[in-house]
Image (cartoon, rainbow, N blue to C red; front, top):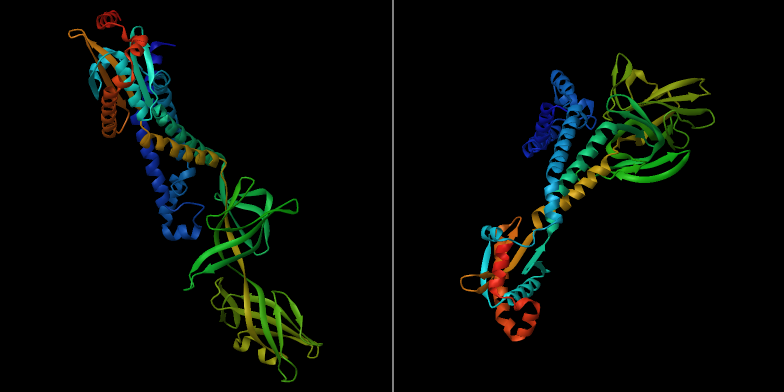
Length: 496
């Protein structure tokens, strides 16, 4: 490959792997996500509500830009892919150095490191082993595990805690990649739609947000739906009793409410709406003979039902209008809302040899109420209801939720787990021939708290130095390394 091409590719890679690039892209994702929460989104919002909220020109403009379905727009999915690529490139670019730091910790500080290290402290000691033993005891007191480090004729102590926190940033990176991967999978292969069922109705046809339909390999039946109200009559919650029907058998049943969906075969059914479907479930009437003789009868009917009142008379429920009006001698429907209901009955009399049109309520010349052999008084009306379900298939949710959990772990390590390191090295002063114990420490964050921990360690070392002569014999010190002269140690240090 030509040098110019390699240089160009290298610059592109460095730009993608740049922290600034990643931060800018993340900010764009956050801003566009906020836009998606402010602007009404399809299909969660009804078309009528969308048209009421925005003018036709504005709605057409928002639809064209994809702002009414932000999280499935091609440009949003592309932006998440770019963010993922930037995170991956930054991790690959920096991980080798981080892994070397993690896998091969720096355990013995040389003279240059000791001079530059902060914080640090030097304490006078009688000999090397006395200082090492005091250092080990102090570290044990703080719950650390000291490790003796040997460099030819030199000894040192190294201890650390929470080295894994150095890799916490990569755990956060991995969590972001999982979240974006799950979102991309949902955007490319997931779908959302709606399904409306009346009481007792079964269907497997879902209407998608783009106007097309999808046939499910199973069916959903609504056994019952209802609404619970507060004391003032305002809705408290909607609920639906659903059954999954497969091969003619009920394989799963659940009563769902808002935010507690039914999940089957990777498809979720959320409670989205509830209301009257304008159809009568049961109409109760009190029938009284017009002649005044005979007993009153309580009857219940559904639409198109026919009930015999006596041997010569029957009544049929032929029409129901939830909101009626009369114009030019005709009854017509104004709306589907149950505001001004009317019921149309046809009373058939074999004795009279004719049918009578009866409307409840009475509508003047339009009806034959007074001529009919029976008079009717409504006693109860039970309307049929529908349940509106939002249906979604989100195959990438496992990635999203795994990423959320992993991010919680990563952020906990980043903010609450500190990598602390301590070094303790006996150092000989060639001018005086005396030893001192050099103590140094380092923390990757929360330096103020670490300084206090370091001072506590220094104080413990000083206390242990005072106690050592009482319980450690000179023979034990000399058996390890105490017979080494300061001059020999200094010459070895200079040779190294």
